[in-house]
Image 1 (cartoon, rainbow, N blue to C red):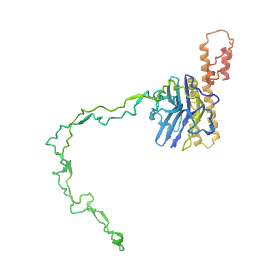
Image 2 (cartoon, helix red, strand yellow):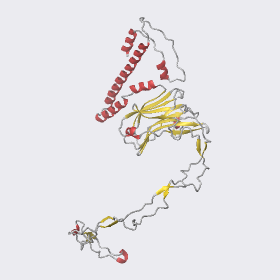
Image 3 (cartoon, rainbow, N blue to C red):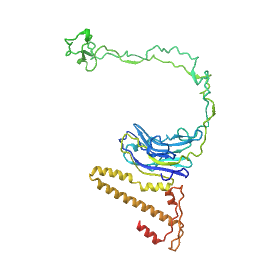
Image 4 (cartoon, rainbow, N blue to C red):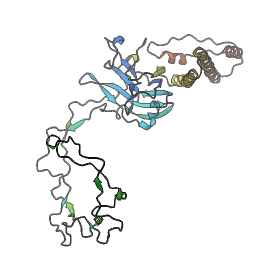
Length: 419
């Protein structure tokens, strides 16, 4: 980046469009805001390159995720630790891996330590940098004493078997759970003298069979054709539940020796610290995509990092139909053989839509400016002294804040005609 991103404004917005092919079996489509450091060499950018924020979808096999990770500095150890947000409902974003469409992903982080995750202009998650990350941004003030061990005689059983309970005499646990049905009778078509399987007459003992080397010959069997319904062989009555079978369960009583679930005493955490402003992260020097994918076809577009929410909304309006036009282009190329003609048509469509959107935004800006200026019958232009942007401000934000020169009606009409 020509200008480092510092977390000294009221909010930071990171957004981009992404299209993930349904054929993707394993790969990431997330963006990384690479941390500023003295020895930063982007030609060696890889997964271990320090980053400030990592945001975006990731898939491997059946596991699907939408990452939001930030690196937080531990002031005691003077090292950065990854903090993971893991509370995003899978049902709210799983479709981006299968529908083969462009999707707008947006992350908003506020200097109040709150954040929002937005998918296609719909908020799907929000939370706090202080409380909703794993491991916690700030460690607990107190921790269990590792040397406080549960005593051997500590009883954690709340209920026990009543030692005074006696099994009733009428309960015989020696009875079987099932007995033969004494009322059952053998069916009239049951063939007890027939076996279910008989010898196969077509298979004989080979003449060269040697029982000393080949073992004892076992004749081949086949289902008995007389037992097509399975009613052959020795008949046995069906089993029914035994009414005399009962299982006795002794009653439970409260354990007089119960002391509760053992919990070691709490002691001050020697690694405790408290950061009131985790939003003030490590400055960002570059933007990168970690392209670790088994399958090709992931497409990124319309990347924006800004401190201004109005600029983000305007950029959304300008790029709203880009993904849809790209999808139309794919279908047209698949239908027509002349790719140059298709590309020309798409370029014209994009130009028309972009021009209309920019005209609408410019006209709205002019109308808003006129509504803020009191009426004056004079058509003369009021000069405005030039103002230069500060070095540490967002360039786009500076342009938005620059005072607008008051214009006459004729000048406005001329400007609109020029647009």
